Structure formats: structure tokens, C-alpha cells
Length: 378
Image (cartoon, rainbow, N blue to C red; front, side, top):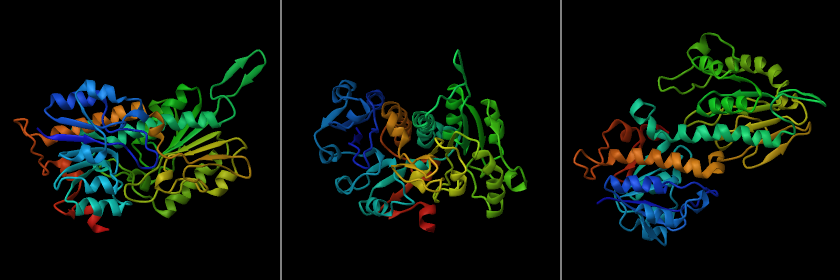
């Protein structure tokens, strides 16, 4: 019986956990033995007793949990001590941040691990249930609006009272991926007037379907600004200048701006300049969801709520899904449970097929080497 280990998250105050009692029960039913490090789920409100009741064995330390593990499930990349405790050939599935965290990548390779970067799960139909970027971005988009509403000193919906009318807040969402769409939907539910922009033409209909207005320079480059995988291409400087001109006057009128633009393996594009921030009204709020990739907003600082000279708040909150750890863990754990089905053959025996298109796309280290083409090119 193959053993799956789940250890405590120790990087950057991470509150999520890679398995929940729900998925432990499902993994056990699928034929896996699950070992959970004591306390792994506490920050996400999953007590040890619930894991035991679901069929998991508890280990006091990460080293103990990993002793016989064939698979390690993590939210973030394992630490050096965990990597040193891995069996040769063990599978590691986590958000590895492989383009930036080369040290961990090389350590995993040196340890002989078959490491799967959950960020690299391909955007194909059969992999949708394993797509952690989407499951976590959905919650990040929701939480971004909640954080913005908390920082904004006014109400979001229009309110008509005996003392007069309060105008609805104007919310502008830049980048209409999974996070952006959820931000639009959440802001609309809270009663804000919402506009949104994206470089991909397909998003216009999605934005309008949620009751928001779309804003973009719709030229030929815009019409061809999406990869086959559904990601945004980096736009030319000329297009960026035209788009900046269009949105500058728009940003000046907004109460809340939420930026979500990311380019896989590259620094986040700068969407909002210092001059645009300076044009905003005192008390306005910007939330930069791309802060961990360098940020979309000039002046945004990782882990800080900066206030500009003109009274604009710029929130650079990392790991927004971690602020909804219970739900974020539940969704991510289901992503990993779905992935685990690829580790079994038709007879239910542990026999991972790394030629499977999903595993092949996510595999970053194997047999003592870094193997992913995008990482070798760099």
C-alpha cells in the first residue's frame, strides 16, 4: 500500500494544509495509507482528531511522517530538512514556484525526487479538477474585494436613507482571469459599480455577463493577445502605452482598483504607475494580487499596506487564499486527491505513469535532474 505524507507548512506563515479529513477518507478508500504530521491542519481549523477519525495515522514530526512515504503532499515547497528525509524516487506535489526558487528545485533533483509543480498542471478538460491555480485564484479574487472593502472608508452599495443618498463605490478590476472574474462577481454582489479590463478579447463577454463594463484598446494586437493555453501574452510597449492612456483617466475616477495580471514564469507586468496612483482620490484603495510576482502597482510593497502622500492605500497582501484557509485547503486538497488517481494503474496498484500528459506537464525533477523544458531553457 502506497503511503502519502502530509506535513506542516512552515514557509511564510502558510495557514493552508494539503489534505483535509474529507480527502484523507477518500485517499484511504482509494487504497492509500495516509500519514499526517500532528498539527498540520490546526491553522486551517482541521484538528488532529478529525484526521485520525478519517483514517490517517498521526506522526509527531515531519521526518517521522516521511519515513516510508511514497508521496508528499504540500501546499508550498518542502524545506531542506523535509527533502533530506524523502525516499529516493518519492513523488512531491506542491506549489513549488520553480521559476524563482531554484535552490529548492535543485535540492529536489539532488534528492532524486519526482517533483510535480502544481502550477504547471495543464489547462485541459480532464485536468480542471486538479487545477490549483484556479481553485486558489477564485478565493483570492473574493478575498481581494473583502480586503478592499475593509480598507475603504465608505460603503460599497448605493444606500438611500432619510439622511440622504450614498453613491455606490466604483470598482475597477484589471486582469480578468479566475481571480478577476471572482473579484467582479463579489464586488457586484456587494453593490459596487464595476468595470474591468484585460488584454484577452475572450474576456469581454465574460465581464459583461457578470454585469460589469469592459474597457480596452481593441486593436489587432488585442485580438491576438491570448495563448492556446488560455494565458495572456506579454503585450508590446506600444500597446501598453495606448492602454495606459485609456485607463489613466478611468483610474482617476475609481474608488477601488484590483489588479490581478500574471504572466507564467515572468515578473508581473506593471499596470498602474505612480502618476496614476497620484491621480486617485484620497481614501481610494488599490489591491495588488500580483504582489508576490513583483506587483502590478508601482509603489506596492509585499506584506504592507502603503499609504501615498495623496492618501491612497495600496495593499500588497501576500497569500490571500491563506486568509480563507479552511476553504482554500478544502479546494486544494481536492485538487491533490484528483491528482492522486494518476498514481494508480487500472488494477489500483501504485504505478505512476509519468508519460501521462498531466504528470508530464507538471514534472519538474526526476532521476536526479531538472527535467521540465521551461526550466532547462532558463
